[in-house]
Picture 1: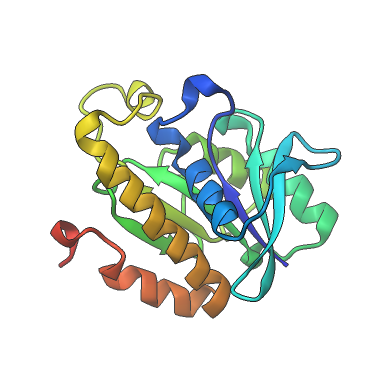
Picture 2: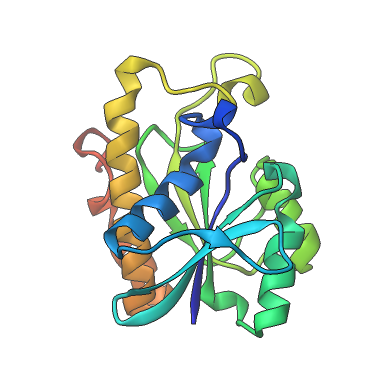
Length: 195
């Protein structure tokens, strides 16, 4: 089984914010697979078991806040006995331009509180993450990531969600190393960001 773990904050007040791109990607994957989210037994999370690229995949949205999401994945991964290399974390990243997509198989938290929580709970940085660029903040980072996309950026953000969902499908189909080569060729970036 594969897990796609979207990082975000629960509650309608966070809908459409930069920090919730992970939720939007798992929502898109769930809708494409005609799945339904329900509460995961014993965990503060919603999940949907679906088939993606022929593989059983658990899509997960933690119901904790971003900075406390780590224990959810740790409990899920340990309880189900799923190898970490089969757990893809989908996360926003203000170090990348708006709409850019990057797949990494390990790495630091990069200043992201959700990744920091995951690393602390899992005891390792070695888990795959699909990073979606939200652009560099012009002011305090916390205020920036918790704010909604302005109208001028909404189309680019929606397109990024679609490309990230395709990146997740590539990861499921090809495995980490091969998918990283495909995703990071920058074909999944908006045209203006391709080198």
